[in-house]
Image (cartoon, rainbow, N blue to C red; front, side, top):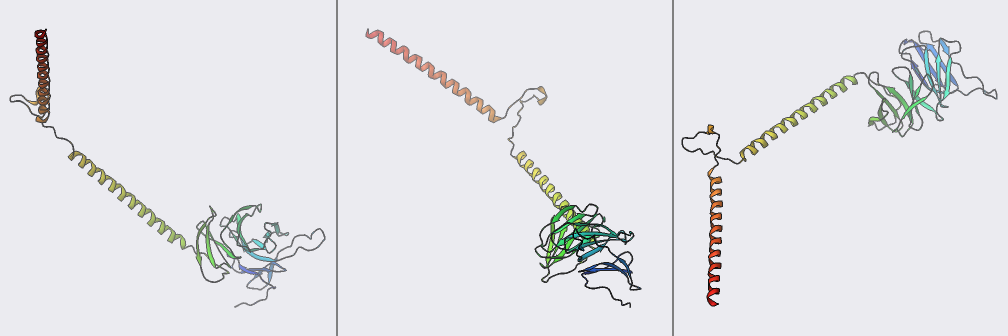
Length: 299
């Protein structure tokens, strides 16, 4: 067990994920420093910006910092004055850039997986993503209502999570920047960590959703085909039946068409009606001739 003293006050302590023998710290009026855990000695101290136009020193308050995951030489710092700073331990002038990105304090920061951007949360619940090369604001994540105390990005999936004084764990989609889910944990929160096992659970859930969708689609298609077959059978059963009647000694190959009794009855009824009409016309002619003979006799 090793014990050593580091300068106070301390806002945050981080251990390098690549070389776990290095420890970094910073705080109010305490610029970023890196210590060797084995020896307890300070192996790096950050530089401040040049004095202002009145030759007064720029105030220092390193609120949070993170090591880049692809190199243990670069550290990103967020300050209580809304400044985003990048330090490179290999350079003599180790402050690579310092830019004011917000008017509010940067309470928590984390570096993206590609090491090209940084997520930063302020004291009002807003989360922003900044480009490390230009310090440009790439977008914000809305929804939190309390001061952000910790931000972490998932090591594999496109999610970023935050916790704070509103007692919620909130997860956002890093592509759309929309809220994905949230969980109320009843107390004010100061830190969180992601695990890569969430990828396996998510893949299993996606497979289950895909299989359930395909099953419901196939069952719907089968149901539609069954209904169609039933409708066709009903339509076939309801079709009118016409019996072909062929005279004796005459086959269907003769080319003549014969209708059923129903159609022949209809023809007989039409002939009877025509005969009745002829009889009525003859009666009317006889009556008219009789009337003419009577008129001649009277005269």
